Length: 189
Image 1 (cartoon, one colour):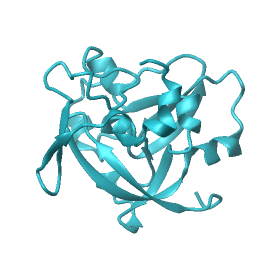
Image 2: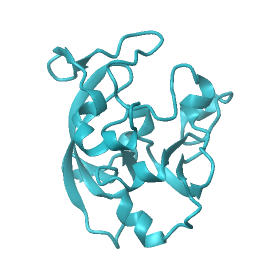
Image 3: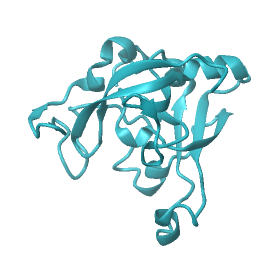
Image 4: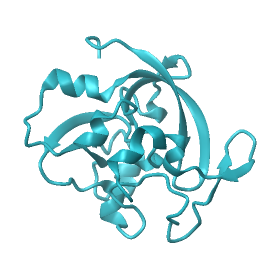
């Protein structure tokens, strides 16, 4: 982190549970880190892993049957996208534990569960990595998980979202409004 220049970005954040907010993050583009470590050309995906310590995390202790540690993944193309961000801070302050300290992923066109917190390990892999929610409920949480009002969650609509500070219901925008920068990665999906 000390070797990469930090910047601030204001991104929309959209939860799969149909709420949304705008968040000011401090951090650096994930692509800058990837360029620094020079993964092998055979890497097609990036796998990110959170910490696994049941004495620190009560959920990991009480829900021991879940597939801990939490893991997420992106295609290399998604990881190298200029919008994909590693956050070290939020609202002008260092990232607190509840928001994923010391570092977390921010992918603004994807649902929040793809934005893994408290990253302790990053791997570059050839095969699509297993992910926490896709392992638990593949019919509800697909690997891509792009914000899309046309694709309902099996238990609720994604057509609208509730803005956190106002409780206003507004139409959901495909790719969370970042389609100009990301739609080309998905063809007709």
